[in-house]
Image 1 (tube, rainbow, N blue to C red):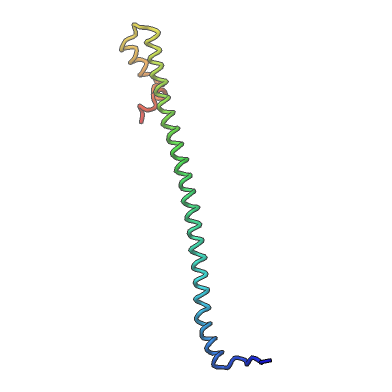
Image 2 (cartoon, rainbow, N blue to C red):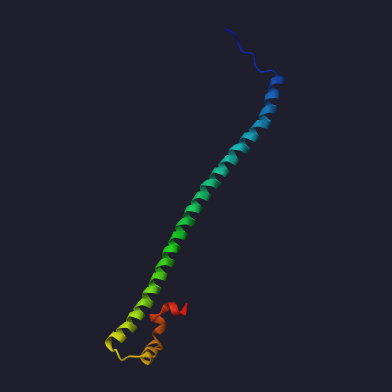
Length: 112
């Protein structure tokens, strides 16, 4: 059996010097990769949250536009009903109807 000889003092110094250089570099590389991975993961979360918020805003805006057009159509259907009821209604009755206090509620797009 061969007995392994313990490291010599010179070899210990050499190994110690290499570890003094390598250990901080390894810790730095691991920390850097950990922080980079975390940053990329967080960026993906933020991107998906922003996409959801944009879609939600677009749906809200589309619903608002749709309701405003519906309100205008309701007002126009009311005017159509006025003329369907009385063929003698002229410009004067339309002006009276359109100058009512509820006109901005019926024609929401007119105030925009």
